[in-house]
Length: 340
Image (cartoon, rainbow, N blue to C red; front, side):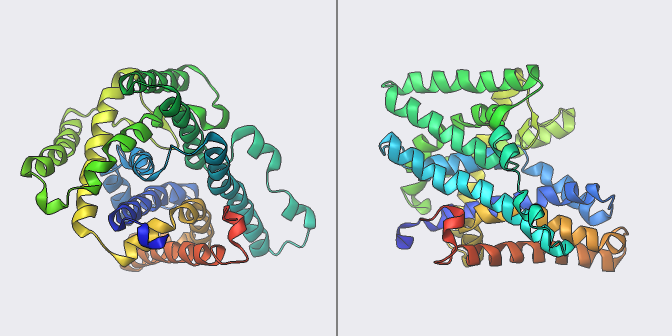
């Protein structure tokens, strides 16, 4: 099964999970009132990928997923591989936190948020939204005969998600995220063959330069005109009139990322990260909180030592996430991440 993986898809996912980690680091630093030049550089740099990196995950999922399975098989497979880790990894963070605090109270270890998980869909919005979006797209793909009607329906769903997010003060089970991002599964499902075949050296030059330049030009224009960047992250920054701009940013940015990944083709480090995105996504914020809390004073300066410490802790964070992922993928623990 491992031999059937397409290397540059894992490379692309490796890039994306690094973007996620870097995007969150200044936000975690803000929680502890930590401010230094390194976090500011990361914060500013992250604007270059904010417009596309989450939709790109959905596009790659659309490329790599098989939506032709019977619904029962498809539903329970995604329930196992997405929603079970969504809960167990949240519980794991609670348990590790209790161990670090030296808690011996069994109640602390049982208080892992069962009720809040079933009410809100858990703390990992991306995983819950991806699960709902995949189920929704399965129905549309398999029940709607016309591909044109599929695009029309998905467009309406995206608009509905945007309107609900702006008009309603609540979001059940990260549903507005799922509605806005689900069309990118359709796009990934349709454009997947373009990236699989033909090889990159057979591509026409305008296939490579054209879409890639669109994202760069759009980002420059947004900066010059000082227009806010539409984005779907934990917080949705999107009005319905900005949907075309989001689509352009997401498609051109994802296209550019996939081209770079296909050009690299194989990179053991990025591929490893790409294969372990789920665990890294779920654990990296928790590890960052633990580290930044311990080194709060040392990080809160602009010295060379602070810069080295900041970079070192971010690297250590990713390494720790990878170690935990490898351990969780072992024979006796992989049930915790739905592999049974």
